[in-house]
Image 1: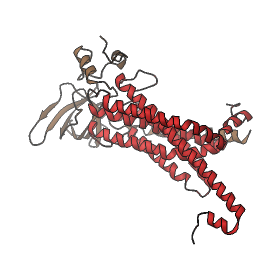
Image 2 (image 1 turned 90 degrees about the horizontal axis):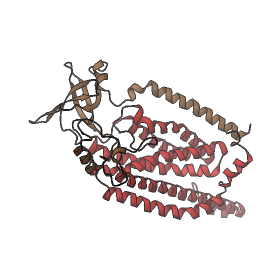
Image 3 (image 1 turned 30 degrees about the vertical axis):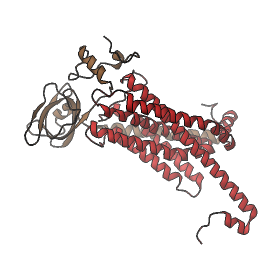
Image 4 (image 1 turned 120 degrees about the horizontal axis):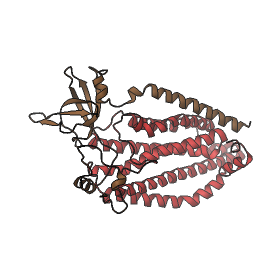
Length: 267
Length: 165
């Protein structure tokens, strides 16, 4: 810990990726592969799960919602973890790309969480008999959704973007306490939601003919999440670059030229 | 101490504080964070005359259905130690069967029965194709009415989900 913080080496290696030009080059090379992999694996996993995997012995074909729901739930939580990592980089190391990435992760994570909640509701009605119940798992995921929405709103709520980044990072880090609650809610308390089928410690309680498409779909979702966030961050970097070019041009031209270049406010 | 390191330690300290505050709060409220109470909790009698959710397994051989204008079902919900008789007028969920987990919403009547206004089915975390379930039942490894299926490692082999003998 001692040597990892604040030494010139760490600072340099962290900030090598902060160079926007470097980031644009690297991400530009990676993005097409990520996108292709995301589309291929998601299509393979979902196609396999929705059409070819066996139906469950007690849930029948309704179990197929799992292939859409479970990867979305995993990505909702791990996306929030990524947001938290960006927030630490932003608060401690003032990493400029982490700021931009955090802003772009928010809406994507909210989208995946919304997908998880919606498909969970569609699954709950035929199996449990209720669209929604206020058990610990469902409630904590709803809180996660609101945390994402709060972050999306807060980072855009300040005139000075830097203050927005700081406030958003603090909110994101406070919300991290929710992640273990989501994960362990089904073990700590009685819930209607069943415990996890796939754990790090034990064998999965799921037939392999169902597990494979689920894992492939999950990897596809993961690549899709990364591809969307990287594409959005690239757009944000380019946007910032264009804005500073416009500002520089306006400053050098001066007078009437400047007012015609920038968006007019008021009259 | 550099500014970066100071910021990191402040963050760690805030995280520890927030984490322990959350842990304390959750453990203090854990009684109200449960979604349902067990038959043993209900029998202990702290929940009288209140609307509560009662959860447990449907006891083997306890389900009686009577038809008529509105279907009425009575069954016993058990957690192994205690069981409570539940009456419910309405349509039971598809997954309802003996040995299945259920969560019922209702009140404990003075005569010791539980009148439910809602019955939800709770399924476990085991997913298996119908053929595997049938094979397990045929070979006598598992009776779905009696309890949860055997661990997946005993029937989940890479060679096409053939249940072990």
